[in-house]
Image (tube, rainbow, N blue to C red):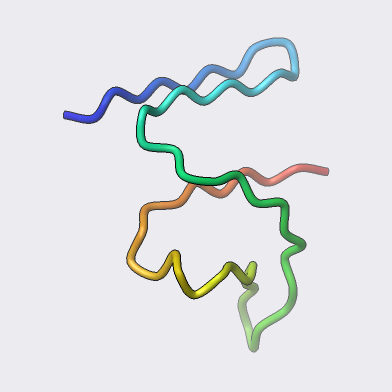
Length: 54
């Protein structure tokens, strides 16, 4: 089981995961009847977290 911990307190977000490779800041864009956030192709097949902010 991976060592992973997520905390959200007082509008602060903390993620602890021993396997973090990168942190990306992307804008969600329309894609048909849905939406997407583009990431580099080298991350295909990797696990990702999506955090939605105002």
